[in-house]
Every structure is written in C-alpha cells, then in structure tokens.
Length: 364
Image 1 (cartoon, rainbow, N blue to C red):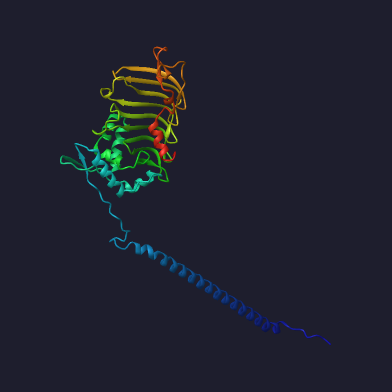
Image 2 (spheres, rainbow, N blue to C red):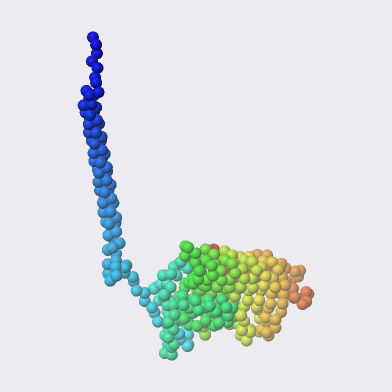
C-alpha cells in the first residue's frame, strides 16, 4: 500500500494553525507574569504603609512633649539667680549660715563632684548681707574663670587676694569639706576634668593646672589660704598661706616640686621657727629624696638646709639633744650645724593637707 504524500499546499494550513497556537500560549504567559508582578508590588506597598503607620505612632509622644511652648520645643525650667552681697566687714558665722542654705539648694556629691558642676554652673554663692554692702552678682563659674585668668598669667598675688573676697570665701564654704570641689575647665568625652582647669575646694583651697580623667595629673599648683576669727585663740596666726607647685600624679604631688608657706613673721611667737620653702622630689605628697629647705625664725632670719628623706622620713645623724631630738638636716653653709626634730615627728613629713584631702575622697 502506497503511503499518502502531502504536498506543500496541504501543509500551509497546518503550519498556520501551529503558529497561532504558539502565539496564544506566549500571550497567556506574558499576561500571567504581569499579574504576578502587580500582586508583588501591591504587597510591598501594603508593608510600606504599615511601617509608616508604626513610625508615626512612635513619634506621637515626642510631638506631645513639645506641648506648653509656642514653638513646639521642650519646655525648659528657668534657673533662679541669688544676689550676692560683698560685705566690707565679713563675718564667719554669717558665711557659714549662708553656705548651709546653699547646700540645701545645690546638691554636691563627694563621689565625682566635678561631674555635677554642669547643673550648678549658674548657682551663685551668697555670703550674707550687712548694712554697708556692694552688690556682686557672679556665678561660681564666673569667679573661677576670673581666678584662672590671673593664675594662668602667673599672678599668684591676685589669686590670693581674690580668695579672700567674701563671695569667693562663701563659694568655698558652700562645699562640705576639702574633698569636695567645683570645677571649671577642659573635660573629656565623659565629662570628667581633663586638660587644663581650676577647682575650688572647701576650707579655702584651690588648684589650677593639668587634669587627667577626673584627677590632678601633670603640672599644677595648689593653694590653701588661712583666715582667722577674732574668737580663735589657738591657731597660729603667723601662717598666711600654704602652696605647692610642681608635678602631680593620681591626684597627689609626685615628682619634682616646690612647697611654700606664706608667713607673717610679726605674728610669730618668740623662739618659733617655720619651714618657709621645701624643694625636691615628692612621692604621694611625702618628701622623698634630697630636699632643700629654707627656714625662718621669729626674728626674720633665714637659714638653708639639706637633708635626705625616704617616703616622708628623714635620715638622721648621730646624737640627741637634751630634749631627745635628733638631727635630720645640715646647714648649707655649716655642715656641723643641724636641724633637730623629735623622733615621733619624723614620720609622714610632706604635704599633709593634700594627703588628707585625697584620703577623705577614698584615695581618688
């Protein structure tokens, strides 16, 4: 049986039908793809709307917090300034009473006290009022900035004069003791004193110089002024000031430095002798190494001495006098002449007030 053979004319309709079917299938596939893309886009838009709604609801509390101000900014609590009176006749009891009221208004913490200064920067130290007054209106920061300016230019005499003004004394009296302080100067990222700055402590003490992470470190100067009441009959009124200038580390004198006492020799008792200058090395505030000492007696006579100390204890020479004292230093001009001291007093010699200040803060 012979097979049927298709000629070209018979194949044309079949080919056309196949092409039509292919075109229909392609169009269906394209249409299905568009529907899928549209569904995905709609889903993304819905998720975006949901996220925007969530963000808007999260912002509502912040927008509400702006209520109470005309421009929508958060309301700020106004600080109150207290007028300071500079009295000509300054009285200690008035200053103490004023300082007590200041402590109730301004909280000062013993631990990291300088970190609280930002909130107290506009606090003003009052010092009482008398009938004859001159109005002085300065914040603690303004007073410290003023003192820092003089100190940075080496005018220590002006610094001492400022420390005796009533509003400066009241600023110091507002602190609870020498281990507390107000600070003005450079700070690090955590707000701690770092760089160059000045601090006022209780009991009329000041420091100006370098700081590191909240403590005195580098080169700096410490000053303590002495003031007396008429009723004070026990204090040695010959002492005017006590200071140290030199190297610091860990909040204490460490390294080479110079200790000095300001002395009113007219107030000195007969037969007394004072250590006026001490120069040499210090370790944690104690004399350590070869020390050069200048003394002044009640007659105003100066004498130079040399001695060797180790952690606040001087090496002694042979011999004792009738009072049981031992020789610790030699006269710079006459080696056979010595400076004598009681053995029990030859302990922890150095900058006692600074060491007590740091000890009261827990050693930091």
